[in-house]
Image (cartoon, rainbow, N blue to C red):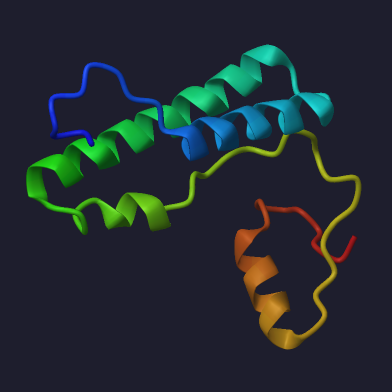
Length: 104
């Protein structure tokens, strides 16, 4: 529909997902300013992806779908992570801030 001279368009699934996400974050106790920042980030990334697809084709911009935002936690963890196996221990050790005990 985007390239068919439509005056107004509503992407119902996207808008529904955005509203559901907004209400979920609010129910978790996230303040309205932080919810707005998350919403703006997602809308901007989606708008960029659609623009790339319009210019280069339907499969262009797919890396924007797979890229996960790096967000800071809404609250600090109450205890450190405990690895369940050696591989998890190696991952946790590389992600822990300097000087932090990952054994909890």
